[in-house]
Amino acid sequence: MTEPVLPEDRARAREQLSSLMDGDGTSDCVASACRLWRQDADHRAQWHTYHLIGDVLRSEDLGQRSAADAAFLQAVRERLAREPVVLAPIEVPAAGQDRVESGVAVPAVANGFAPPSAGRRSVFHLRRWVAPVGMAAGVALVAGAVLVTRPGGGAPEAQSLAAVSRPDRNLPRPPAATALPATDTELVRYLDAHQQFPGTPALGPAPGFLRSAAYAPTPSQ
Amino acid sequence: MSAPSVARHRIRWKATVALAGVLAGPAPLSWATATPQDMASVVKRIQEAAQRRSFVGTYVVSHGGHMTSSRITHVCDGRDQIERIEALDGQMRQVYRHNDTVHVLWPGTRTALIEQRELVGRFPAPLQPGDGARLDQYELQGADDERIAGHMAQVVVFKPRDALRFARRLWLERRTGLLLRSDLLNERGEVLESASFSELQLQVRLSPQTLLQEMHRLDGYKVSRPVYVATTLDAEGWSRRSAVAGFEVRQTVRRPMAPWIARTATGSASASGAGNSAESAPMLQAVYSDGLTHVSLFIEPFVATLHKRESPATMGSTSALSRRQGDWWITAVGAVPIATLQQFIDGLERRKP
Image 1 (cartoon, rainbow over the protein chains, first blue to last red):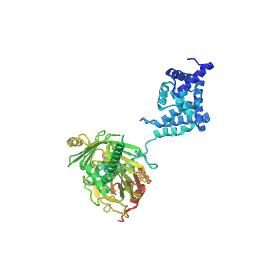
Image 2 (cartoon, one colour):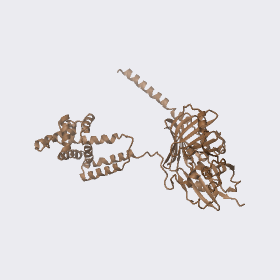
Image 3 (cartoon, helix red, strand yellow):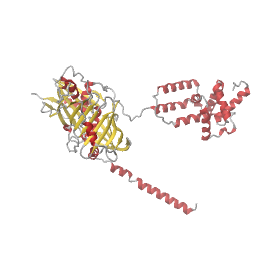
């Protein structure tokens, strides 16, 4: 589709965008709105404005200057880059849900473009909205745009992201300060000789023996 | 629904709640009775399980950021105990134990070490009062059951009564009492060392003969047999000014410092094991125990080139502290706070001839 330059084209495109945000568009409407969103910077700005209007209507705290949003987004990206890689997938349902909800909730109260039914939404509507957008290209940018409009709610999310990959507190941690590498041969001589004697009568020789076997000496060459 | 039927439903509902109350009521009590509140019975369970059970498992020891894992096969036919421990990390090493006899094999270098460990105490040794296992310095605390290596485990904590030792948290397999995991905790509750089965099979049929054959397959191995001579500090010219609370001496031996060094120094399959080099000069080792942990006190002639560090050093949970005393070099080693090692060294005195 070519860029809509005529005023009526633009107005129709905005209607489609509004429908998309409300989850009321037909599949054709969703496809064309998403395509426009990807191609047209003005369209993306409009998408942002709609969300911003919705945010301000809900709470003035949400309507902050986007310089702070950009700084926040940048900070989130930097922190994400620093996070260790999580090998096991961990669910963070609360944060994800929250994000989607805020994105959808906006246009209901945002403007007159919305169809009459836009005021009444349900979880079912949310799902229907998420699926096609999820399939559209540039979905990462959508998430970014939603995040940008939510400076207040962003911080806890960043924390929960950090919490996900934080290592388990119950795992043994190495003691500080005087710890030495296992290559300290002078010390290892004594440790080996010490561990050779299980010397834990209460626990029976076996556990102590197991433990000492883990330390059993290696022949030095 | 008619009024009587509603009333009946209410009654039935109440009865169900009452029944649930009856069922829930005694549950904490039965838990309490299932948790032995005296240390003797906990210890007895652990010992009996270690003596009677056959098992195969992977045992992981993590300390100070290091981790070693071993594969353990333990066979018990009611009379004999045979055990094979294979190190899974680093150099290949197999440790076999048949009751008191220990064979350590390094297949890579075709070397082996044979030791009799009866000095440590007969195995299985029944727990005797005053056997160094009185545990007076600890109090027992129960905790909620946890799951370890696929088995439900009863959790007990031996909490020290003073600052001279660390706490120990133990996980006992619910049914057999086998020790599944043991953590050493410092005064802030941080884990210093954790030794645990990561995987364990309890119901296994194993042949003791196979293990015994492997244990004695020593063809082509250079075998050394270090000699440990039982003695006492008193007989060696040392005395203790003061005892360290809760610790009793378990055994004192004159031994080569590092039998494996002695072996390479002599360079041949020396039958006696203890060579004549300075490295293998006999040293004294006195082992003290408070029932849960032990401290070794090493006494050897001072050698300026060897003995330099007088500051404490820690590897995982185990610390070492050395001090020169005239012509002697004293080293205390144990999984205890440094202050405890200090007390051991300070209490030692060379008797005037």
